[in-house]
Image (tube, rainbow, N blue to C red; front, side, top):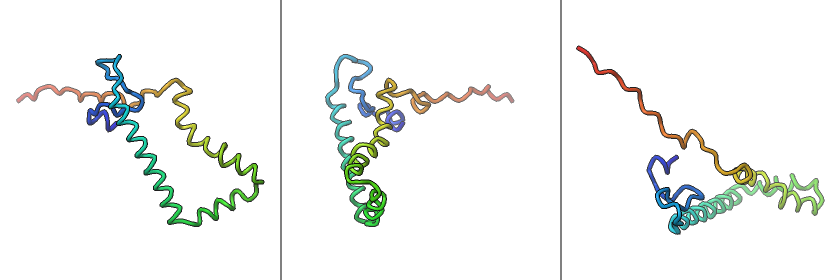
Amino acid sequence: MLVSRLKLEGWVTGVYRAPTDGSRVRVGWWAKQCALYVASLVLMKGAVIAIFALLPVIFVFGSWILEWLDPHAQVVFVMALFPLGPFSRFASPLVLGGPKETSADLPLPSPPSRPPCQQ
């Protein structure tokens, strides 16, 4: 939404070709998107570390949640089942055939024209 309002080029995820020259891949667009992705991952990991440092009770809560499972089931839960929640958000557009057009992607309607004032 912000990209379309500011008319920025090369920031739409997965789009590496300009509409005008569809055959040429723009490496700069890929590099911008890759840098943004890596920066967001680093910031997210930093935020998680900060939350763990500020709230050490999270470790106690996690141990309490997992104590009812045997060690092998804990590994399956933590490494296989738990990550499926966030993964499903990113995988669904791939499985369903790509991103869908939303109302944010559509152009805004122009205001209705008013007849000139008569005096």
